[in-house]
Length: 227
Picture 1 (tube, rainbow, N blue to C red):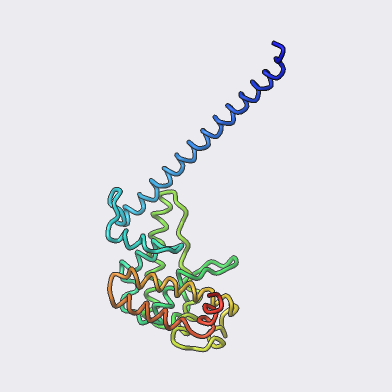
Picture 2 (picture 1 turned 180 degrees about the vertical axis):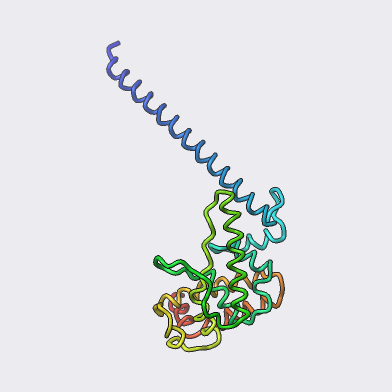
């Protein structure tokens, strides 16, 4: 064959492409199997907590599907088990901050040492207990653990929702004004979601009032600037 060298090069290229195709197919199969295993683990946890029944969402599951936050399952369970029931707007804002705030640095979050009210302290401990149960379920299923609730800004959010000035709110906090505004806006967003999915009208109304109470001063101004 007068074109043997070119044909041999083409054959080598064809063999290389076949090897690449086989490699990609193996990678796709592996990823699909990994996704299927991950989905199975997630469904196992959701079924154990009553959010799915087979492939069907329960009423609790439909509420969960409307939540969009990192700690959505913990928040849904806190609402379902009454952690937010009977709280006034400032207390709801403070409790919600546990799910919005994440302390930076090596210190691990812990239960608030000085909760502003006794009732709020009880709910923070109840939220922590729920997280521990959820963590065990996720660990048993081989899933990444939900982030632990951090009560580090409970006092600050409680005071802010009650109308305290920013300087007073941050007096005892190792936090900049910008960081406080950022976290407060996350709290307001979560309060809006709580108002939408709360199982009772009293919690929904208190969450809306809490969002309105937090949306003031520098927090409100920052929202206008961004818009």
